[in-house]
Image 1: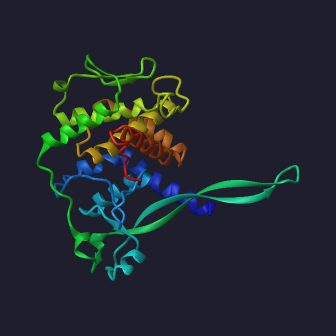
Image 2: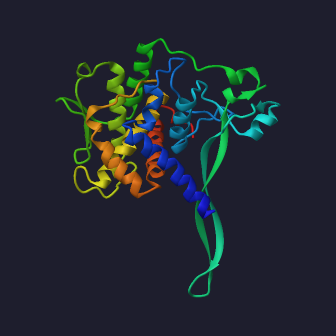
Image 3: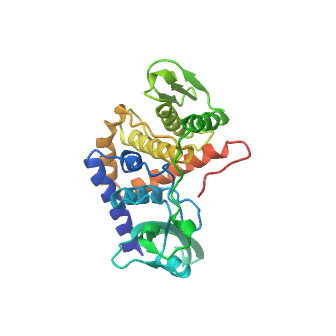
Length: 300
């Protein structure tokens, strides 16, 4: 189990490191691919439930590489149970499943105690475009969104519902944990409204790290250190996840280009770092969804 766990961490991290070394953020690929077949959304399981965390990044990247436009994925067995079949020669894509087992072991005092051991298991899924014979609904394409005003209105309502203090001034965007507020330039300072909301998503993800919320701390002590890089990576991923949920196009901020080198250092030194960052990003996105009226939650 340990060998498989390490192999999964290594396979995923090596792929993302390769992307970053080419100046490409894996989580931005769907928007950079020129995909106009439909709106960008989270990858979906065969039952319509959205994937979360690291699996979003992995399947987004696979869709771009292999040219898939459908967001839906399933296992070989799930396709068979639907009286369909994966076409001969098609190669599947890796996703992961995290769980834990409980073992009873004897401690130093000779007493039996239960120990929880987390593990990571990889398995293979296929995009529905690799499968023949599925019911018609599986081949429906994401709806093309042609109403940007409506999308922006939804984003406006989403961030207003968080009740975060947002100060509009200056020409830089950041979150102040000491003052517990988000500073944003005026919307007119951005190239378009979607870029404004994508940047606000990034800063709102930082806002969730406050001790009164998710209390996220990577031991950052100064600007640019490893803890800082890890937090920026979490905010980047959370912004990408939220952008998919809110149907907005992420802003590739120029000031984040300098982070790539520090992200590479973190990822190369720790094969689990991208998994941890994706998990924290998912929690940040879920937290912000949970602040919406009616307790709306992001799909897990």
